[in-house]
Image (cartoon, rainbow, N blue to C red; front, side, top):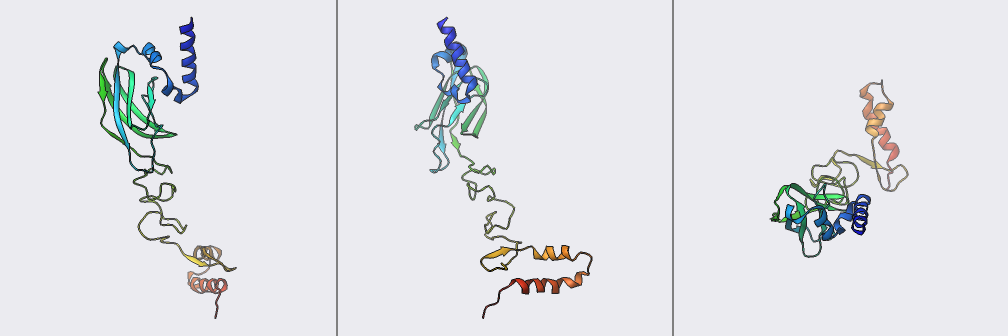
Length: 211
């Protein structure tokens, strides 16, 4: 009766928290995955940058209660893994850093996987810490669309290409201007030949001239 209560309690804790599986005892794993029908998986990992501390990363096999967390030794071992082909997932916070597919486990056998490099994508733009231009800004990465924000969004060395700026009517910093388009919309139906003088008038009205 005591053993039954322990099993129910552990199963409940796993269902409540996805990370609880990392704390399940080896004794419990042996009960649900008998050692004579299970194997083990081991491997080593390294961080792509000194800026990323991967300690605490969850290493688990989806769908079964087998997992562990990375410590300071940069090595891991999963015990009592059922025989078969599995995926091995490395998860940090809400990010899946890496997935190793088709890891074959045989009973009473230790399976070693090749060394793995883990690298986060902190801003979620699809470029990890080493590939990104600024991993704290999702608007800045290789091939990004250039927007008028005084930042080189795509890393080509040119800031705000295609943007135009004017002096703020009340002074101060330069303002992003769409006066070219706004004048054309405002004067819709008029001859386009009038655009140049209208634009010049707009410039004269909003530019402060100082001696």
